[in-house]
Image (cartoon, rainbow, N blue to C red):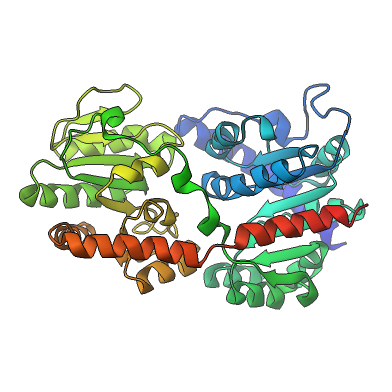
Length: 426
């Protein structure tokens, strides 16, 4: 009855939800990609006859997708016959998955959680295992998997205090949903205890650490100054994964830093593509020349701003940054992955709103490589101190690498859990 009522609620709000989403997407200039897939309709033959174990990975957006990529590739290397499907909710996540996973997985959009829809997708795909990166709870999907005796895993799971409070309001519901998941591999002991208090069976919960420490962030090709058009010798200030309002603060910091470092160049990377135009307007209103990366430039003049209006390049660009600020931490978003610049041996700046990366930010702050700043003025002041003290800068960069190395290991544990789950099906 609980799931029936949940399904009826979804159908009841659908006439209001879908027009709102359509209008919102149109207003933001987004394409309406994947609608057929989200309703469980795929082209004939999309799900070919099974030839090996079939694993369905799911990651909501870009951050979770990047965290999942090493695990998917590691599984494919150990089990080359495994057939992997990878779903995302967002278009940007879908795009990054296609770029990073190449021929290792079939990329799809995640279905709406209507009972009939998820049953249709499961029936067509016929997965042997469903793996969710971080903590997304889709009740109808989990029930449909459970009814078909298909195991499910949540890896890199986390429950922030804010999320715990929200979930707790519907504790009677989640106590029926969470036991449907076969296993939980949580980032920390605190996350494990929260998911247990919400209703997950303790015997299904373990702590594996945060897979983001294992990401091969720095193993790819770092961006080069020449490719970006940045002059040799210029200090580089990067503000990455920014949200509304954060560009203004970052540009204030840039203006102050130019007083002491007149040759400095700034690179700005909004988190979402639909905000590229707004970010460019903010740059021009601040009095700077704006050069879009997608258009390209052989040379970025000092005092100008390079707008990274491309996808999947920010992590590599941090390699050339002398001052790296990661957004989503001044806005009420919860932060983004500060390990991306840290993996290049760089100190990293971020704001106080880091509840989505609570443990990572604590670890970075404890070793000194993570520097919390409340606004653009404080960012400029702290950045200036660091740039004028090369020895300290180098020491903090080394501390960042040591902290990452010390906290690695989640990838191996998560891979082992996936393998064990698949082997138990034999």
